Length: 152
Length: 152
Image (cartoon, rainbow over all chains, first blue to last red; front, side):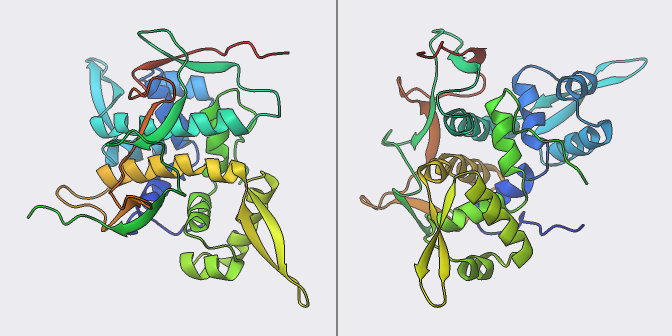
């Protein structure tokens, strides 16, 4: 079935949806943040069909979120590494984590896993704020406006 | 085609993926934040096939993100409203917005739309921080750990 593409829509949410809406893709990205880099590791960890994983990794390379790097000669073997763009996508995964941890378990229950800061060891609760003011942002505190003119 | 379901996985990212991975769903949610509430308004705004929109709204009601409310008698007409859970999902949309605005346009270009604070009128740049410390969180600053034991 042909799907409507959102990758040239003027809305950033639409362009992100075009990528995230590929079933499995957020989970494939998650694997890299857990330190996995190789096809077989990820296929094993997610139990994702190999053809699907091949397609998803291919698109993520095409989108510039991963690079494919030979880590061994004879036979050549490849692994995938996060680019800066791929790393930045972690914010979306963190927001997904928080929302689902809060809402996608039955009342009084929650995930058995949590996030801790690597340095302090303290639990971390991701939340979205404005970069400049540090104030909580929600879809109710903002409105859409014309972007700032860009420097020529 | 039957898809692998992620809605009972132990990882919050997986449970969020199960919902977001329904093609169109983040865009349908976006519409409510823009103030649209009625089937015809959303169908018109997104140009989404009506059968798809029916299915997506149905699932969002089932998930408790929207409620269906009669706003008129004879003939009865319904609209949809965000629940607290649906409103909380805005954080995921804000993170998607920021990432795509930064990365899904060609170099030197960007979206023509931006977010402004409704009160101050200042531009807003959503970013993910830890709720308690206010410090930037990335997938590199955190690790997975066992959750805190819950009160009985």
